[in-house]
Figure 1 (tube, rainbow, N blue to C red):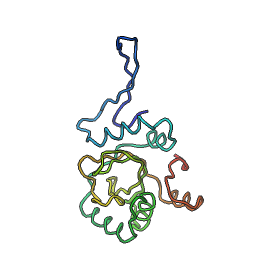
Figure 2 (cartoon, rainbow, N blue to C red):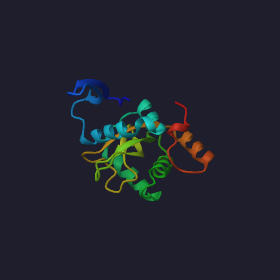
Figure 3 (cartoon, rainbow, N blue to C red):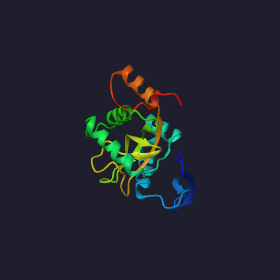
Figure 4 (cartoon, rainbow, N blue to C red):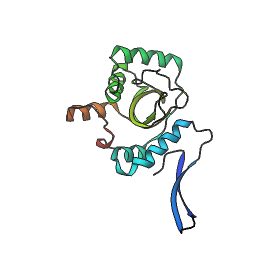
Length: 178
């Protein structure tokens, strides 16, 4: 597997009992935040067995986590207005992206590391002009230090159609065309 900005490299070593092969991540970007390592570990642990993770890795990229302050305030207020619900990130991101009514606000699915717990999880959020604005985690709409986001923007019309067809919230990445 390969995350944009990093490469998974196979390395062989002798450990005294014979040759051992292992995969290691190598950074192609300098100064990657600590949250990126948590995402790499998560992908290493579950990636091959999870079709959603495979789709995210194949089509995703590291996301910018420095949105403009005006956009953060507007989207944060919108998240409160639509009734941000803890642990319902797919619903929250879909509702906020739809209520925003702006072309520069996008629904994104991927893998993220929250600021309070350095453990990667599948997640959905919105982006304004390509920068993450968090609409589920209550700490802040601005991703904090140690957070990381790797994901794929998905057209809101596609998300709405998919959710309406199946009648439930949740990730849609494996059900949409590239």
